Amino acid sequence: MILTYGSQQDYDGMAGQDTGTPAWSAEDFAAMGAFMERLNKELEESGELVETRALAAPVHTRRLASRDGVPVVTDGPYAETEEVLAGYWIVECESFDRATEIAARLAGCPGPEHVTANAYADVRPIAETLADLEL
Image (cartoon, rainbow, N blue to C red; front, top):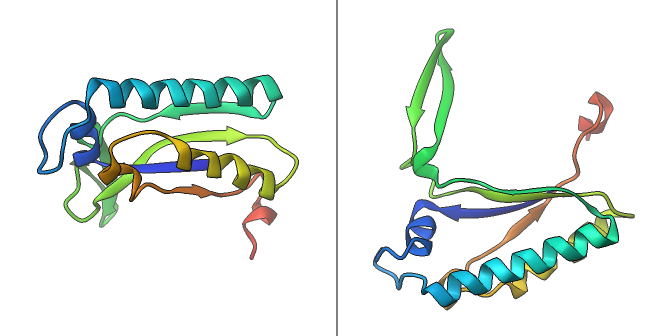
């Protein structure tokens, strides 16, 4: 699984709002969308793409916790967490190294410099069985 991250500030900037850093231009947003469409199409054509999704802004999130056995619901965004999962790709490929190569392509995603300079992705195997969780 390839995971990408963002903050509420990132989502606000993509929506054109001034967040103290320059907002994304329509051209920036279109370039990012075109890049993602190309990447997804190439992965689909290679047979490596299982699923991909972008996630809504953190402000639309609810976090559930348990306090003394009682569910507690908190609406986002969360002051204690700046970055949240922004989207993911599930790929089925020959190796962990190949998944890492695919994730490395995200470094080429266009966007404002203040965003791309701090962007990162994680690559994590998906545990299919309980044994996969063992260290």
